[in-house]
Image (cartoon, rainbow, N blue to C red; front, side, top):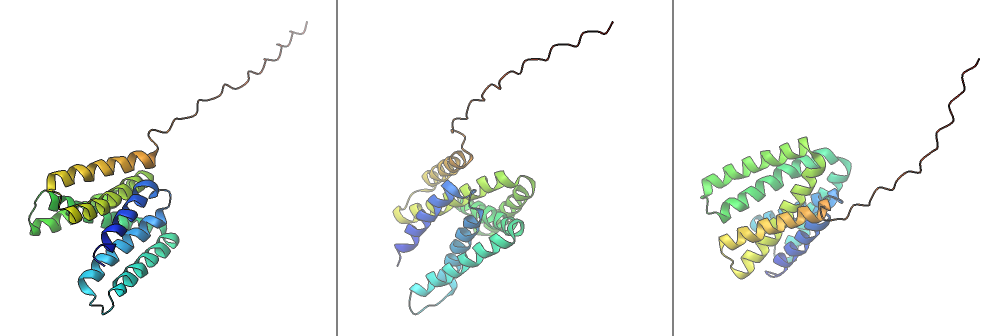
Length: 192
């Protein structure tokens, strides 16, 4: 059971890094699942351990349905949550103490919300890459005991890689084809 969560985080993180913007409802579902899993592992005292994953899956499905029907509101909420959790995670990596960790969450949430409000498409690139990098880095650093400096390097490398992959910055752009020139009609002769 302890190995399943990190593997799921890595798989979901890879999905977000590669196609998070294209399938925004998937971004909402994955974030809902990740938050549901985090909250369920802390607060649900389940006799069968798999019940925690049922609660997380329900949160993910709810998030996907919410994302499909109320797109802008769902993405705004996800912008706040992803920005907040990501900033809180990075604050932990650079050893910011607990009371200031909440301030990082709030500031990151506000930045995420403002991003969504101002540049919707790019906000989806940024938020899905941020969420994917957070999920993968948390799973990897917890699994192998990576130090904070290396964790930051891995986090920002994954974040940039996700942005590049999703925005298609290295995609070769098609060369514009020259339009066929239309010969000009002969000028009318002046009437005498």
